[in-house]
Amino acid sequence: MTYYPDTANLYPNATSVTVTTGPTTRAVTMAEAVQQLRLDDIDEQNPYVELLIDGVIGDIEATYDLALITQTITEKFPCFPSGAGALRLRKAPLLAITSISYIDSDGATQTWSSSEYTSGTYNGRGFVVSKVDYEYPTDLVIRPDAVTVVYTAGFGATPDTVPRPIKIGALLMIADLHANPTNPVRNLPQLSERFLQRYYPWGK
Image 1 (cartoon, rainbow, N blue to C red):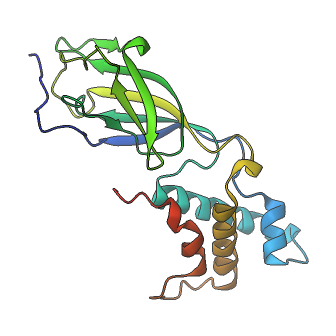
Image 2: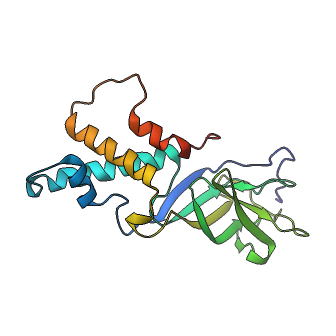
Image 3: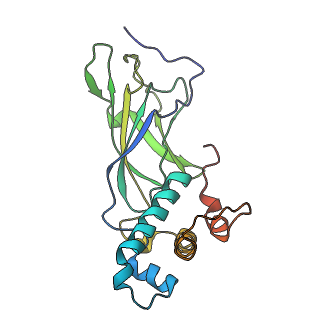
């Protein structure tokens, strides 16, 4: 069966977002965390500090839909957009599109030629659109993972490429967790949120 997306479906939502190749280093280094925590004897607390770093970075990336260090993302969509719509990619900042494929009505996987689409960013978020004089493929199977977009995202490959506001926010959160391990209830915004607020995906 040939699948033609609904004309109102200008911006289909991703049905899954997976990090298929993770970063090769942490966005916040152990040395930065140790300096923030003012620890005298770091050897005994290494595993716990690493746990705090990984937990905070994971929370920031999930909350703000960010890829801090360069990584490969795979997103699935139920269809291509209709008309002049776009595939809006979840993780930012977008670096490059690796491939776009889809499952046709016969169940075969097809690759959409990179000569027929282009990518860009809007309000800090990446997107894919068909080029002028080209259209989105229409012979799609009806299933939630009919379209697959593989791309790279991140601020860079090393910790020094991560924006300073994100670094400061992460270090504040790490220090807060280290000093308050009992998970206290808070209602007022924290200072770390002020540093990270500019990166929040408002359309989320």
